[in-house]
Image (cartoon, rainbow, N blue to C red):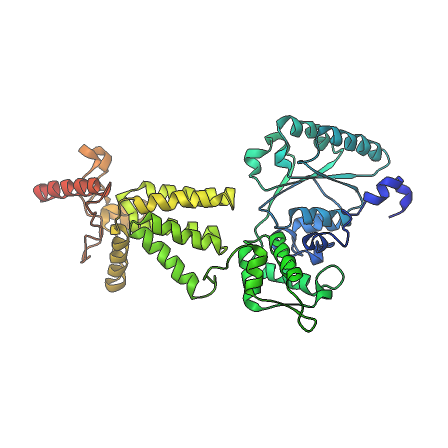
Length: 451
């Protein structure tokens, strides 16, 4: 890019990110400078992604990056700084206000007249109030600046709708343990920016621990690795980091839990069985174990939805509603606050009335089909538009239940020859007791009026 396009102060910012000194923390030193070095978020910046093409061709629109800490939002913004021909202005909503941004806008206007774009990056953009966000709106709308915002909070609640509608929203996910391993290995081996000059050796249990305790946060994992590397004394020129060193550096003990080993399955089994057994304290304990080990909260939430139907069922129909709401809330909020949502769900499900009648019912129905095959649809239930449906409609008309008292009428719904009914036998627990009474009353009426 010819320097004649920019003023001297602009040449420093254009196409560059924030300068990182050799004394900066390891997480800052290891920030990737190009998309090829960027780890994670494959769906967003993979080789075939639309966002990557926009970055590589320098055809950006205003963007909003939403995701948990340490997943690459600010890093990607700085990668964009290195890829764009625009002047890149980097601000934090924590320390900057409208006055600083007005100066940026004034400078951006003067650049536009010279055919130069300005990219304005605002980290923690949710920290700005409504009036501060409103001050940005006209300048984003008329293209004075291309805005890139980063937030850890749900933008649907924290950003003005008008501003949000003018930005493309990208959801960042926590890094996987495999991705964190790649980040740590690169930092360990890199001799220019990383710890390569220290001859660090990280044993496998320590590596697994750091990847697990970071819970998808690369910054957290790198900070712990750097602390351990600087604390361990070299032996024969090598700094050997074991799991005890990693625990000390992270100030957190490693639980007896391996997300790929037996303890993973033992712990989730204990969790489910504790809630099934109506012990909220035990359920909360095993929940805490899993969260402390870095278990994916989405995995926990999904298991709670299954339990709500399998073990609570119609004894408390609200259990499934609450569990499903918990899944949505966990996805919206993320950790660490998602622990509160999971806690509420665990307490409710553990204390709820229990019934596995629906679980038994579908098992019986599936067994009937597997044993005796699929029966013929009774005539009155056939689609009246079908050939057979028209043929039987006059002989055995369908009785519309809403035309009868109590919105119920006896007629044949099952194929002939089905042996193992009833499939569903409601218990006397909770709300299911009312279902049982209603079904019993209907059966009594059917027995009394059956032809």
